[in-house]
Image 1: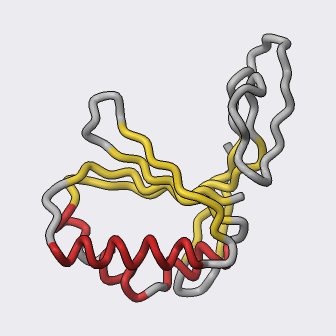
Image 2: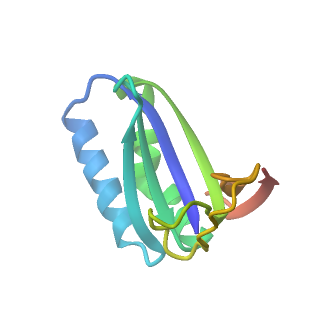
Length: 139
């Protein structure tokens, strides 16, 4: 499972933003490897984290090459007061079993307290949408 996080501070939106945002979201959801979207707000409510989950890197690369996505990337300063992207390969999740793990990720209920409780194992995946080349960083 690959998680692509778009973390941003909203700015001023216009008709171009809404057109591109809708087209990109529709396209992402249409990709064969698309799984789901989750959105979270910072405690202060001023930063959004939109997380798109995909089953494969090919779908992520297809999203990166989508013309409307490229068009929007060229205009981020117009609509956002800052952003960053985090792409991670979710290998496992851990917890007490009362919240579901993402599909494809393993989660075993472990009630033994230890120093790894609550830890999520991820690998950052760097994808070049122009070449489909990838590299990984373990964390």
